[in-house]
Amino acid sequence: MTHTPAPLVMTCGEPAGIGPELAVAARQRLGRNVPFVWLGDPRHLPAGTAMAVVESPAAAHDVPADLLPVLPHSFAAPATPGLADPANARGVIEVIARAVNLVQQGEASAIVTAPINKKALKDGAGFAFPGHTEFLAHLAGDVPVVMMLASDMLRVVPATIHIPLADVPQALTPALLEQVIRVTHAGLIRSFGIAAPRIAVAGLNPHAGEGGAMGGEDEAVIRPVVERLRAAGFDLRGPLPADTMFHARARESYDAAICAYHDQALIPIKTLDFDGGVNVTLGLPFIRTSPDHGTAFDIAGKGVALPDSLVAACRMAWKMAMSGRR
Image (cartoon, rainbow, N blue to C red; front, side, top):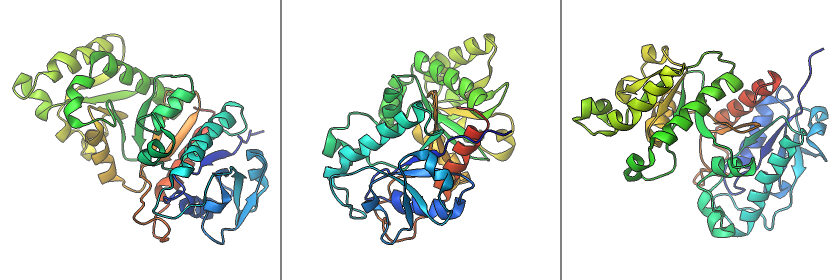
């Protein structure tokens, strides 16, 4: 007999962003094929949303496909699309923590997180974390994690994430790079079922430094780490010139690319698959995916936001849950 996992739990994200309307659209697209419960304040959903209020994620299995299963969490204030209210910052943070508790207790099989607005959380609740990923790592016990962006066309991992470009050379230390490679390697095995992962490591500088002519970090920092881990049995290549890593033939040669900084990783995947890219956090003791976009305050509440990335995040999380991966 095939075991059916507990439903996913989808966090509401920033109530004034596109998260609530995309949750409704995702339910319409997925129906009961990918069961999830939306965790948030029902007042923040679009007017007229057909919903079923439930007391636990398990109840989502029995909710008709035309209703959104809602696990209510009270917030301090209503939401105005496009305008973040500092009064709701604490509620956003509480929902994330509650979702982690649900998945740790086995009541949900995975977490799908809608986008948050870090400035709104900092202004309203003193949020001290650079982003969602770091907060989830803290809730999981300060475990080392990496942010992977994944689609059917490409998987990329930025070694440094939300920092100024000028700070990247100092932040990209041998210890950090080794940790990112190790977590990525383990995550490809555990979460994607790739028995022997092939990993490509991008150089920091143009032409991967061209032997030191365009910067010394590639030879002094990246290459020694790659060679040391390759000697330990990892299937690694690099440092490679980033400008030749992402065409179709090159992508066939690796299972994931590790990049030196945020845009080096996100530009190629957003170019190749803007609506289908999924954020997967590797290293957590549970499954977490999210859409590869932000709160989009400029279009919130207008009914034009596409649910494709959120739908892809739900499908990927459910596939991992069904296979017993994390």
